[in-house]
Image: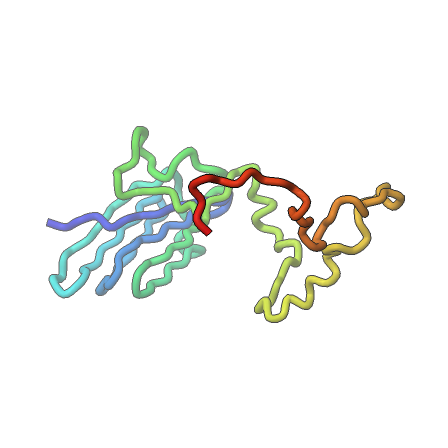
Length: 178
């Protein structure tokens, strides 16, 4: 009897990401059909345990536009949707998905955030973070907040020496050892 591998999924309006998590998979086979059927099979480990799954997806697929990449720990599939749009769920069947089918939160993007996810980041690149020399222009300690130019901060002891407690009187403890 075969087991089911862990399936992680996420989507965009034009594609679905499916990651089959199966370390040490041997001979992984992925079959895609235009009607939305996704089939995976492989054996795993030295015991050659069989793993397989057959999923009827929510919508139809563009098989030619889809990609499959097999690695040592995962088989990653980028499936092109036949029609652009957000699916209500991964599987055609209503109700709770099988326990081995889970959301891939590393790739997940909400429908409202898809445009932001497609844009490149704001250019925030720390490189190798060697020296952090590029952080000089971030204004750390320089300039201050607008409108605060005339304020006197001399009484705040920010970063100066700690104030001395020598003048304060503390009662001596009767049980203290010195």
